[in-house]
Image (cartoon, rainbow, N blue to C red):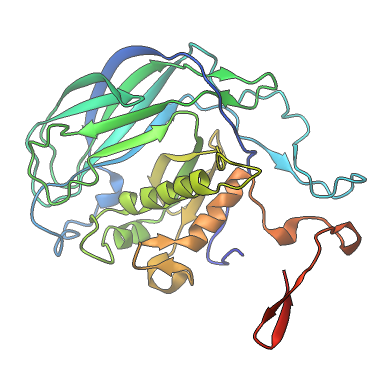
Length: 338
């Protein structure tokens, strides 16, 4: 059940499972300091936010990316209605880096606070173990720093070339010793599965500013934090969707690889999926937003299509092909089939 105010812009992808491989690291880091374009013309954005510093790790980008999955659901194959297939001509496209290939992770850090930060330390982690560290300069309010880390891609690829095997994580911690006093301490770190599906999120400038104001002051004044919260909830749902036929849950994971503030969506690139946010789902644009958790379940529903979860009404099965028995169950004076 999609919402007409949104426009899904990337083809759905196929699910991924993962098994074990060895990690190799190159301890290299770099940094740059720029002002995100999102803040242009919004000098008074922080007028009601808490006074102080708020170092926020907003997202981690991975480069290079390769071809996103292109999936088709043909209806005219006898005995296989609606079963997904890779689009013809894309079966041999490279999906993942080669084992041992150098990949670059770039973490974005924004001072979401109202006053400049002092210089602060940072630490990169692979699989929860520190692999690089350093010190970054003072960060003005609304300014952004990026810091990079290069890693030898430790995953192998399945024989069909579609799955990155094994699980690893990459993480960046700003102020790991907690020496900087901040208004919010919950957004100083971010950890991503390295073989997760990569999303790009585009958000209009007006809506970006709207999401920079939380619905509850217990949460940071950060649009990026709100977006990351939806992704974390998706991954929690995948992990906890355990059933007898899937005792480990859904092993696919997702991550935000790019957040761009802009009014238009560029052509599809190597990202596996994404979304264009042009409405505030917290304030009337969604019927499924939960203010107690700050989660918009309709957005999660739509993003789930990016990992091959399709609506039941999209399954091409006619009445003669449905073999699930309906067992009447009493509910008061009414019998319903389940």
